[in-house]
Length: 70
Image 1 (cartoon, helix red, strand yellow):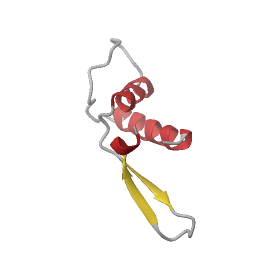
Image 2 (cartoon, one colour):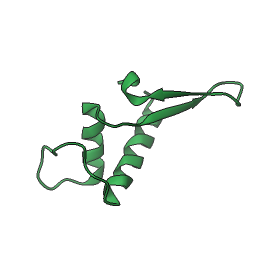
Image 3 (cartoon, rainbow, N blue to C red):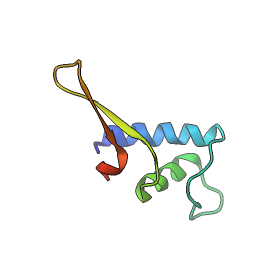
């Protein structure tokens, strides 16, 4: 998992949480912001997301489940 993929995943998940999506964990701290919750979900490994990596030819891609990269 690259730092760019991590930033994209945390940002996307934080936006989902801010828009009212259910939280997949119990936050360790009581009032927490969406970014902290998304980071904690990523560290625990409960996010059901997939990374799409484009191959060097620019046309084909690989879909890699996030659980394989953690």
